[in-house]
Length: 52
Image 1 (spheres, rainbow, N blue to C red):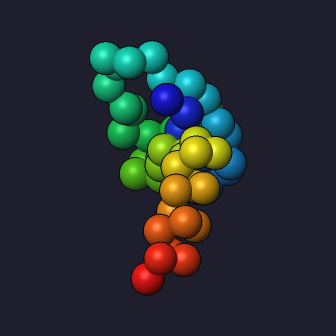
Image 2: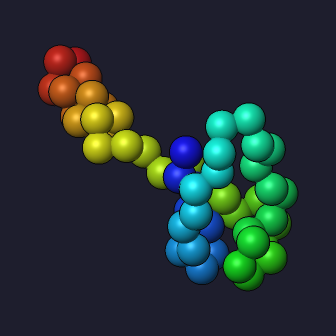
């Protein structure tokens, strides 16, 4: 899975089974990491919004 820091935009991959760090490995900002959605997840969101 890919993650991105909301503070510095650093992106990295985390192997399955590994724990998400509490802070960014690059800038050390705490609680700033979020999972990057895959292209398919983004498409599914748009399709779902169109159905409402």
